[in-house]
Image (cartoon, rainbow, N blue to C red; front, side, top):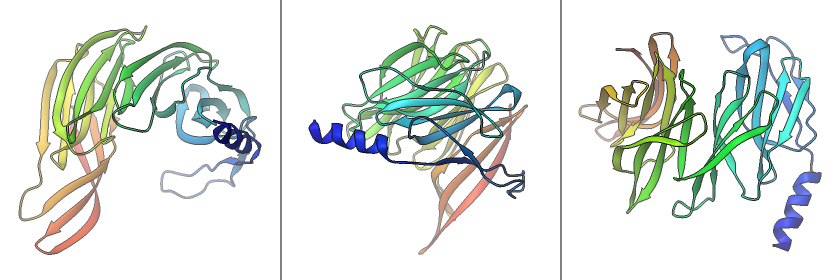
Length: 273
């Protein structure tokens, strides 16, 4: 414990400069990097665009979640290290209508002992609700109804079971259902609000899988693309980008052709139907 405390104090004293680098849609820098002066030394894990040209920075200060509201010129409106006695690493962020955000994090590094932490912060960075749930890894999305969709995995034997939860605005569980069983990939699932409901995408049996649900959690359709000859496409990572009534899915994958193997990135586009 003394070693951990000394290490945390050393981390707090060390300097980790944070900078913002604006780039255009084609990836070119549109200005020089802008320094952001945070009071706490932070390891940033995510950045989310908020209304009014603001940005929400999310990360960790020591073993606690850190959130900061900054402008595009690097000015810090507010900065908060969230309270609590349990170490949490924030892995997923979903903005709320009041300028705040829902945060999903993990407490514990071992799959068997890990728990998921869900917190909601106001537009001023105040922690207004939180809860702990069983699970190892996951992602959260705020729905148009004000509720939350949460996709997560839990260790099951030698693999992971993937589940879906719908939480109310008060973070109380409204519904839960299994999605996939005995999968080898963890942390490979994405959820996003869309067209009054939400969409989940992930890796199923090493191939791309996705499904759309209505606001109540009823499945409307699903699409599975398992690896098949002649070109075995083994998905390793993906993102989910909803655009109006179109889903854009960039996926990193290994393509196996006989004895040859190469890594590619494929961008897929689906209609909402």
